[in-house]
Image (cartoon, rainbow, N blue to C red):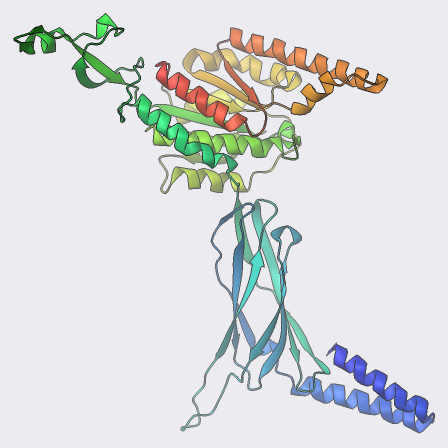
Length: 447
């Protein structure tokens, strides 16, 4: 049984009668009348148990975007139903108004033959703006049916699950058109011709000062005779396509650190999405996986559907785990993906402790067969603390920050001596800088 505000107002009105006529019979009569009215109202209310609830599937949405979760309510009872519906979304779903009014007529009516029936339906829509990625759920839908007097009613909770998948936001998407344009220029698809060290023949053109003499095509030059003399013809090359790019995202304890109010893992996801979309646009084959103690998600360009969507969907449920990353599994995992020379991009932390014990021992085996790039998020707070030296406390913090920066620089030199490219930048600068590194490697013919 559910009591409404109107029941409270009626009770206050009857209490005023008791105050005016202070007699035991008056009190008993008012109480019986109030209970009787509430009981009759509850009996006359439409049965919420006769309602069938059906969830309408909600399309995936990126973090920060708004969406609407829809639920269809079917009324098959013989009495009209009016009241409220509450959709039980978790707080991170960002539901603006979880309580919605509902009004349904009787679900059954006798036709000319006495057996005709109809089912009343209502669509309940809840506006959502998620504040975290992953799978968000509404475990139940509560339906409250109020009687015709508006004093009391009945309430039933329908256990019907509704799931919304929230994908990573992909803030660096704005950089994708300019990076793709640079790739098209590199590939010779525009009027601008950048002479890279590729090995795929593109076209022939006249020699201009500054061209490599090794690019002269002497047979084509001999065929092009003119009255004004012989014109040298050179071959142009385009960077190779169909190369393999492997993106490994570290989801261990170091990825849980928040840098500028964003987890390091989310910054790595943003960089991986931009690089994956860029490499796929260049015609390369892209493989992505995340790992900690084991493999936690995976996507590849050979799978059905758009690669960017596949990567975002695989990343959506990945959360940092408070365990050390097992870098020893990387060589085996990469061998299972491809046996050919590939560009391996490891998105992790440039932390001396975890890298010296985990990644450095396996790097020689990786750099021997692959071109390895280590991408890490740089904490701008270290630079700010290293510069602030006004008080004694700030001096001690600056010394600690300087020590951390010196250790990082030593680690960068050690990685460079092993043939590893290191890209370290602030959270919002890492994706475009990693993309620039890929374009530079593509232009120099190292892929």
